[in-house]
Structure formats: C-alpha cells, structure tokens
Image 1: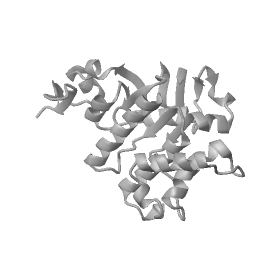
Image 2: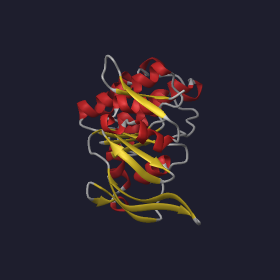
Image 3: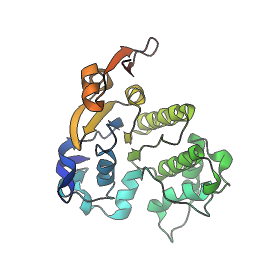
Length: 255
C-alpha cells in the first residue's frame, strides 16, 4: 500500500492530515498513537471502507478504486474495531464466510475451502467452539472467531483495528504471536492498530505513530523506542530499558 498526499476532512476539521507513506509488503507493522490520532481512519482508507478527501492510494501499483471487489477481497482482509453482529451464525459458518471471495455466493464450497476453514480455526483455537453461535461467545472467543475468518480469507495483507481490545493478557500474547508467525510462514503483511506500545515493540518489525492526524514517527522498535519520541507521541514522560531476557525495548511511565 502506498499513500500519496492522502488526507481526510469533515467540514473544516482535518481528521487525517496530508500523509505520504508506504506500508511494507511483508512483516508486522504496528500503528500507534493517542485516541483520535487517525489510526482507525487510516485503516478504513486502506480497506476501502472510507474515501480520502484528497490524495491517492495504490495497492501493488494499482489505484484502490480500480480493483474489483472480489479481487481486492482476495488480497486484503480487514477486521474493524467494532465487528458487526453475527446473529444466528455458528463459528464455523462465520469462518466459512472468509472463503466467499474465492467461490462466490453460488459457487461450490470445495474440500480446499473446508481445509482452509479447519486450519484457520485450529490456528486461532476456535475449533472447540465451532458449532456454538457467535453471539453466545465471550468477547475474547468472539474476537478470535473473527480473526479466524480473516485467516480463512487467505489474503496477503491483514488490516487489524485494535484486535486485542477484548482479550486478556494471555490471549493478547497468543494473538500477536499468531499474527507474527503467519507473516513469517506465509510471507504476509499485517498492519495492526495497538494501544500497548510494549506489545508493538515485542512483535512488530516496524512501528508507525500518528498524532492529531499527522505522521510523527516511524521506525524499527529499537530505533523507535526512545524516551523523547514516546513523550512526543503520548504527552507523558516515559523511560525505556532492555528486557533482560528477550532484549526488546520496554517502556514505562515515570513516577
């Protein structure tokens, strides 16, 4: 994905200021920043859920508006911050919807499709609840079911808007480890909105920070995680140290 002078405004209010950047075609990129900084808006633009006020966005060198819907859905999978209701659907049925771009509404659901669905549920630990209705699940189970649907979609780029918000710490770690493993094993790219800067530093190859709708920083975790930069992003004084075992940078708020 490449953005060239892209901005979003509502009336006189700039939601996303003119932005030019490229998103890596592989690995995990974390998108961080304060609430209201434009993170969700940026993901909606990349997912074709919202149109920019100005500027152009291309994917694989092709303008987003030029992609056919099914062609685009085979390449890009989007998990919104607030997932829609799935009333009356079992987990297996929800995950199976991820195969729609590959066979269509009247297409035949093949053995290969079933294999993709089973694999996605296995990877997300949702196989045990496959016959339960989605609306009876806990928040964490429901989020993993939606993530399984995206994995079944077999796209090359995953756009994940706060996928950890309903998860406890253990499941946050397992989801981030899963996303990381998927990008490595399947040569995928993931752009993920995160509020926990330490999770971003631990699992992301690159971190991008927005503030008040503008790009303020980007870089590999080792370069990104400095006290001055984190204070600029979050408006609080922070320090950074190296994890004694993993060696990754860890940030904390000064007392």
